[in-house]
Length: 314
Image (cartoon, rainbow, N blue to C red):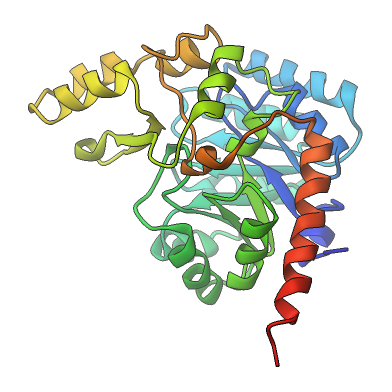
């Protein structure tokens, strides 16, 4: 069995995180991952605090195992959401789009582990000064909001630069990817795309079908000119967005086109005009399985891959 320092730190059996995806990182999905002995993560996104608290209560009804919440620090409700985290004594938070250092002292008082998501060495080193417990190093292969550096290049550089555990994210969906991440210096892996194709994920059937049909070059990056690129499946929305973007449309017009687009695809099932945020590894995925089976299969394959590598040493 593969056990790493992140397992001891968080009290989980397997070093697998579920990405805290907006709209899709619900109590149902997070609880299923935690029950499968990984770390399930509720994606707070732009949830109002009462909705966020309800998701936590729903999760606690389904599992008593460790879980986390992903907090978007640019949310208009971030202060109220952080207060809910404190009141509900959430054991782990991952953070995005900002610096969580303002909240770290209060979180430390209740024992919450703070794990920001980073896309560069500079940001990882800067956040390290705030007393964080680990970092999620996310490569550009990921779905949704992404950086510029690939997972293969990012993980070893961040692992060398920080003295806390590193969780690898971006382009990982099987044991081969997990084994590679461990070889690069990661203590765990985080997967979003793989868990979208789980039985417990509430994504609309059309959304899951679009992911299943994806090929290796099916995703594109939008928002490159805004400084906030987003990886989605190529569709009518992506074509409209890129046409506007590269014709010099103002930022406000681009934001208006993207407003509500993720919900339109993920919940309403409009995968032509909505935003299907998904990673490049979607081209490899061919099935929908329970979360627990996904975790068991990946960990078993990881052990097999690592064992097989021993054979090439002569």
